Image 1 (cartoon, rainbow, N blue to C red):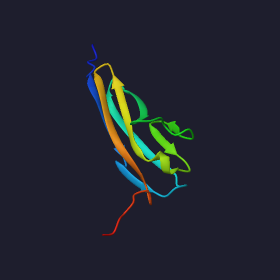
Image 2 (image 1 turned 90 degrees about the vertical axis):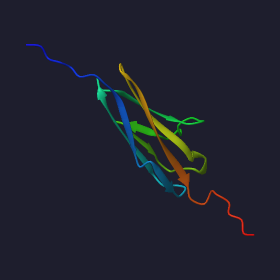
Image 3 (image 1 turned 45 degrees about the vertical axis):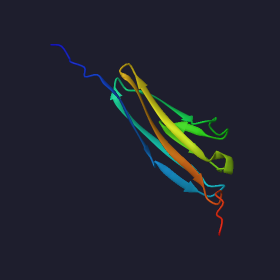
Length: 102
């Protein structure tokens, strides 16, 4: 008897896909990746480095005590022998955009 292994390219979802917090808050992004074989997951920050105080555990990115300069886009990339998939989430800090009245 032979077992048939179904191979599948990765699929990725990030929850939440956008978050808006105050300076000092904790931010948590969860990356859900599927595929066969099981994909390797990594977090990256678009146009920058992950914050120094971040932690990653089982696909969950945590950024405690968020600073203004932590705002930006964060991506979860999943890779296996069948390919690569990526999803991106946006971190916005409340009070960082300027509003002008005419």
